[in-house]
Image 1 (cartoon, protein in one colour):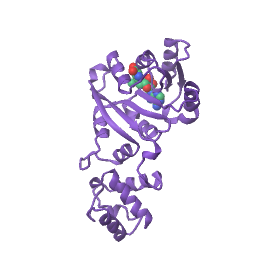
Image 2: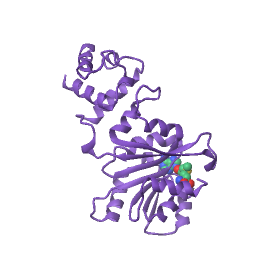
Image 3: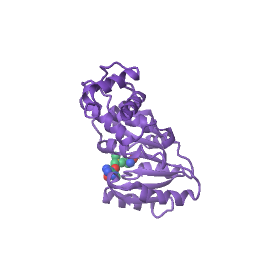
Image 4: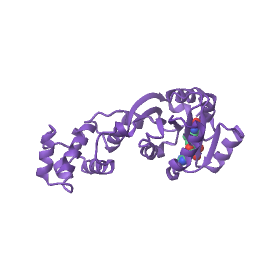
Amino acid sequence: MLNSKVNEELVAAAGVEEGDVVLEIGPGTGSLTAALLQAGATVFAVEKDKHMATLVKDRFGSTEQLKVIEEDITKFHIRSHFLPFMKEKYHATKKLAKVVSNLPFNVSSEVVKLLLPMGDVFSVVVLMLQDETAVRLADASIQIPEYRPINVFVNFYSKPEYKFRVDRENFFPRPKVNGAVISFKLKNAEEYPPVSSPKSFFSMVNSAFMGKRKMLRKSLQHLCSSSEIEAALDNIGLPVTARPSDLILDDFVRLHNHLTKV
Ligand SMILES: C[S@@+](CC[C@H](N)C(=O)[O-])C[C@H]1O[C@@H](n2cnc3c(N)ncnc32)[C@H](O)[C@@H]1O
């Protein structure tokens, strides 16, 4: 990131304040880390590249305010490593941590899937993503060609908000596309839509989209007979010919709950 103002805006988008504990993924040379430390946060940085991890440790020296771990975030067990760190910093308080990260665009969806169900650890996840991805994830409207299970997932676990666009000129090396900052305010478990099991719910949603152009009464046939699916759709006020792109999160929840009662 060449523009330090963008880093400050990322920090502000997460509402980082003095005393906050922040998980930063991929600190690189530490430009965002510097802005987080400046805001008074205690930073737990996970960096996959050995050279970068050393560089960022050397840059800030030994300080209580920063811990750098050399690990790939997609293989890192956040709960077992980050939770003890967070508890130690927050002492006995029930405060939640935040995630602020400017990651390579190619790992962003994996990171989103990993972090959004962690509302018991993080209050907010603020990420720099490819602009197109940020627009798509922040928009829960159906009937757009990009509507996918990930949209249902994002809205199940969080309240997404597109924050601002970051032109590609601000990055080095310059990517082919613009970036954007998106914030996901994480829900806690009591706020999740009422489903018997998120695993069975997302398995149904994924199956529904497998045949994107197919009607649900066909694509969900491995779960129930088509007449049972039609009855459930009718019961929740949807046409029996509905396709996955006709259903918002609540509709999927009601459909799942009807089908699992059958
Ligand atoms: C876009 S750079 C970060 C730049 C830095 N945050 C800044 O603001 O200047 C991405 C960093 O993420 C690291 N990274 C990439 N994949 C990672 C992963 N799976 N886990 C942890 N770090 C990763 C890279 O080594 C690199 O240092």
